[in-house]
Length: 283
Ligand code: NAD
Image 1: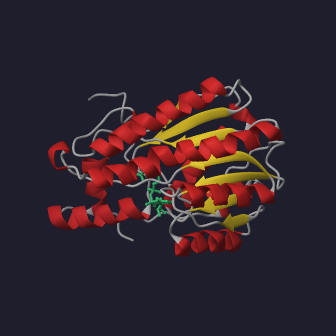
Image 2: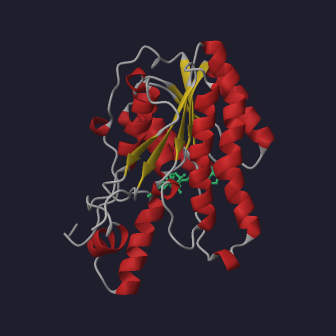
């Protein structure tokens, strides 16, 4: 791999952070949406390595199998179960939660699945807006609604939501994505407000993470602009950030595990902004 190209994400077992936590056992269950790819896959694997029985859910059944296989290949400590389901379908989500509850006590929920669509407001297709709303806001609320009683019964749980730098500031032509990421921070705070300290919530905001979606964009942008892949990352994508490296999906997975752990017991309703200085510095 030359210096001009960008290495794809790799997940080694040694990259996974282990947190000592009495709740990180096989009796407790974590549900992870978007579990077939990118950040969701990495988070499912990190939680399983931390000993939690993990349910990876997604519409992409082949991708879910890939997650289970990757967990097996790495020899992670806990179980990973693939339970396919579409976040736009309430009945399918209810079935996922019901099945997950049979595996143990549902203590953790990671709302990670998300999609992007780029168009100016005047051109934005409203049916695409509706799907994004269902996947990125209504779905996380519905899953929270279904999981909270289980968490209550188990003696407390934690809901982690994937936001973005776009939950802090916005860029043009991403109106629905911006709205969903600001919205998920509202959901996060609402869960904290009603959780009485027993059920916690937090969100995670990152800049660019090396997931398949982003890696494909790098190749295409390099080709169309006639610049190297590294220049696309450093000048185009992370031009505004101080740290000129994208995050690895496993680093985001590690943040979810930290947020779920008792180390983060005072993190409630707020956001972990891991953006390499993208949002709060100005050259
Ligand atoms: P990804 O495309 O690799 O994974 C997203 C997953 O969501 C896919 O597996 C997809 O099948 C699933 N999904 C889509 N529609 C669904 C539906 N209807 N029901 C169930 N699952 C569905 O993307 P990623 O880069 O890993 O992103 C994951 C999350 O992280 C998203 O919320 C994204 O907005 C956020 N995020 C990503 C980055 C980044 O740079 N990659 C940065 C900040 C935030």
